[in-house]
Image 1 (tube, rainbow, N blue to C red):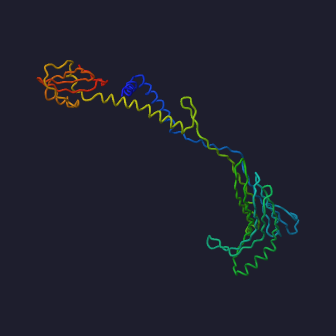
Image 2: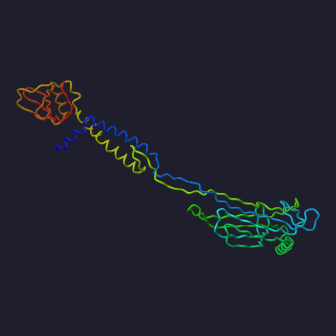
Image 3: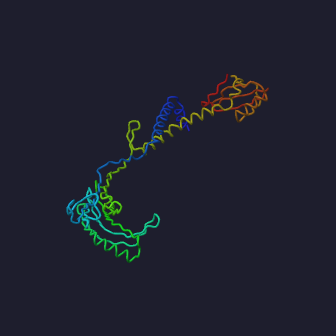
Length: 340
């Protein structure tokens, strides 16, 4: 008990309370500062760019003429002059993709109903597939328009549809993966080109003959965020635990002091002006009061001064009524009440 009392007296010293107050303010400041700090720092670093390119090169063999020659490559071709097309498809990727490819040339026969297209038949004119070589492939096909026209007439006659329309498409699909900077990439590439026959303009032309896709390659690293607290560097999670613990521990003595200081004001404030120093005389009977509230009520009833004196280790507040004393005792261990 004596040891605990000495500890309590030590904690109530002003310089000790001041140190705890400073510690509370500092640790509280860091705790509030760390609330908005993330525990992990996510950083992305660009290590390169992934590029895929697909291109359809087209040339036409023409009927004998004195204008263009026999074999030409143009953006637009006069319909009556073209006999066949040479289609060369090139695909390449950087860094080189490891995977497979499929190249398909198809002709679809369709009719329109309102804004909807209804495909009635499909011919696969050419199909090629294989593995990529150093992330690339090349394939070629000759599209004979004379054969295509004869086949179209057969299909139209078989279906019995007068307004049958058709289109030729070249479709390339590539799937594969590669490793860059320790990161695995999984890619899928799709490219579709259409041969358009425009009777109004009298021209053949190809749509979207080139397709290029570029994507940045990044590496993401997640690391614990570090901060400095009172000159010591540590991660945010540890810093939060330490500062919160210090804030709580430094708050306990301050709360304890505030509580004991408040407890010391135990109801004597109202009657303090009527407390005088002295000691009772000619007392034959003592009535003991348990609380300061009892003392206050006794004072209101008897309406006599309150005598304050010390008796051993106790403070005594007494109201003398004849030879009867009404006493309220409390330990004199630092309550701080003083008589006038």
